[in-house]
Image (cartoon, rainbow over all chains, first blue to last red; front, side, top):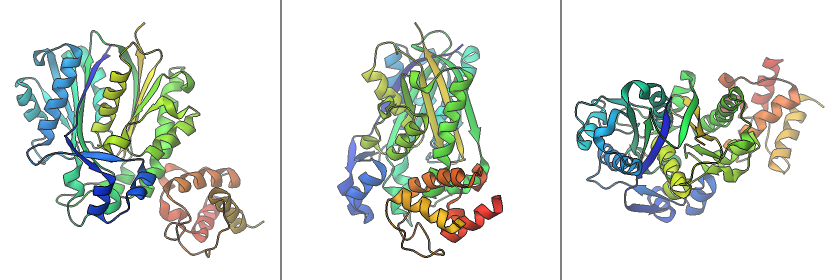
Length: 311
Length: 77
């Protein structure tokens, strides 16, 4: 068994609103809000790195769990925007946390990386002990590469999130997960070497709008849980309109889907854990019903994870 | 009603206004459909023509114009 024990997050201090983004990209602030639901995002400072953001989120997560770094048995790190092809940021994050010697594994998956990390952590926790899943992204640097794609640049922000998966205790048991990949659409959303992030938005939306609800429904059906009884849906924050679309597909009220994209934009793989952390802060009591996590992104990789609160 | 007329009816219902572009013109570049309307249109096409569109066919290029949609539907018949 494995349990969700705590979440954590770190957001850089610099706020970039739509007016500033519109001026920088030659777009319209109202259009950005209308097309994405994003009002502002955070940009990392020049001195910050994917690892430094991750370390702050990891410490926040451990503090929320009431644990120390020495309690971590395995570190899983997702990032699609890491500064180096190798090594990935995982070992530097481990060093920054003072846990050299603890295995630190990189998951170079954008968007869905944190969900994949959580699902893997649930399987690995019984053997390794507490698994710290961290997702960290500095998207502002990869979308700023030239030639910049303004329709893509307006969507992204920087940040890091973390989740502690424990084999012993937590506020909800990770009961099941469903992960999937489809390489036929790998070119639709990609970050080539030294090129800006490329996204064929129409293909991505078309695929996501079908694959996310299908994954959630399959996961819930095999666990005999109706969507209406889910306490909260915590999703990768890619686009508010997409989240609304998923809610409609499941015939679930939109307010069951936690949404903070308006404040942080799309922080790729970090967004799921940042959202989960904020949701948990706002709902510190034991959840009244099941929790569903879901993500979709480059790969294509997507999936859903079910957690049942402990009574 | 022929296929093109049925496709036009679906698009007009989705957009809430008469369609004023030719069958070969891009539904996206002309601003008739955005990404989310495209998603709705695919679902409506499946229902109207009693076809199942697999994920592997879900690319905007296949649905970029009335002529392309018609051609795709014929290929699924």
